[in-house]
Image 1 (tube, helix red, strand yellow):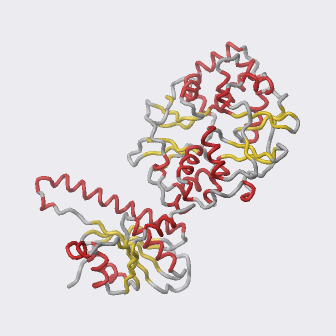
Image 2 (cartoon, rainbow, N blue to C red; image 1 turned 90 degrees about the vertical axis):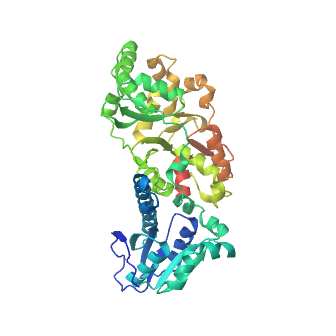
Image 3 (cartoon, one colour; image 1 turned 135 degrees about the vertical axis):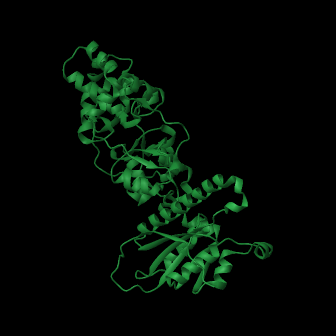
Length: 462
């Protein structure tokens, strides 16, 4: 008898080839790892001219089972539809990365029957699906969707048995980032937020108290996020006041009375928000590397902010999963990591000159040099140490003087690695010292490069 296919064709991409399609391949997927392995198997065996269809089937809960709870069951079924759409969206992104034309199909009903009906309707030549191992007892009493399809599908069926070891090998390097969601990299701590009506001084206090360099600014009246305020923004505002030759007391008053919203008016920094189910690879590749964004605001599907993922947080997360990356044993010299001309500043220059140098070159830190010898590091975060000093006196202090009064927690001595340092040791240095850059020195202690979080993230993707 004929089986009706209850399908929703979500999206069809423009074909990537003008050749006549050779073979129609359908992959039946759900949220399991065995489906991911089946999908990868299909991708590896496909020719460029083959046509690909991704099908997922959700099984509704019939209302007649519990008429009194029809409302609740309706809500459950809506959630099942939502999860099915999310599944197709993830495979859509995978197909984009593999540059594959794909037709996405969602169906509801008995999985085995719906898959077989879709195969017949589409004129499929090969059905690919995953299968988790079952013993004879489970197969006899529970049956198997893959068994049903092998017996009833009007085409050849390739059943890919789930192999955890093989799948673990697949989830390495960039593939690990592809299969890890952005929300998994969150620290679990609630985000620190400053109100748009709070003063710049209050923002600086929050940044210092929480050991962070930036945070979102929220307009509570309109329930709107205006952007991110950074330590650097406060420093540059103070620098502008200083250049206007205002008395120190007037500068301090301006910092106490100027609102965070006013500070952001002249800034055109992008405020990037992503849903928590975006993949790490997409976040790193499209946002942090291409757009040079250091922090991503993460929100749930209801639009609520649930956390912030920074470059430093990602590096710490990767360190906890370092076994996923084959290059962890390789040295800086082998990978030629961080070998570049380094912008530096003399220890005889003033702090305000260092801040200008950072802004002009769009960098966050710079090595302090005594002729050819590196003697320290100056970064935007060092503005935090100005709170106990006269602002004008701080800005006009030489870097040599600054290094003598710089608190120990801000690392007065420069942190460095050598060309023989391997990537695992490098990431450990980043994590243990809570720094944003490490300098590369040769055997004669000569500065030959600098490694930032950007360099590490680029290495992870490439």
